[in-house]
Length: 179
Image (cartoon, rainbow, N blue to C red; front, side, top):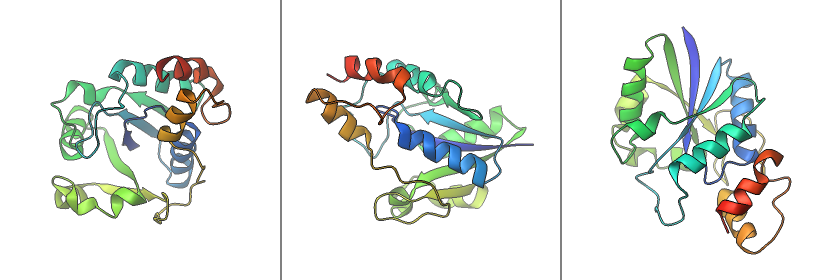
């Protein structure tokens, strides 16, 4: 049985904070892989600033080249929208019976987990790994990098450098797509 952490998000765009969380959880929790589930539509977030699904996936895949055990997935692109975690987990469990899935979420989401659809079922059937976010604590100790996708989009629009915030191989893609 393969142990797989599922790290969902819009990754709009992916940045070093996302990569650091995935790598830390992979090692600390003894997982075989972490799949970054690029979400086409988060039911709890606004769509206004969301870049095209395919472009976000492409940048995430490019950003993760050479990152052992972590990959970007388009699995949710093929499911009904909006993307509810419960539906994704149910489909994944059916399609990958040889995998045991762990849900990775930020402490900010954990604080409001009871708002999630089928949250009790998720807790009954899956392990949840919580990473610290903002002022919220987690169940794992991961590096908290002072970076956010919102900040990166704002910096690009202001003509400021994003070097050191996103992997070098996607800097030009991010600058082009978020102007």
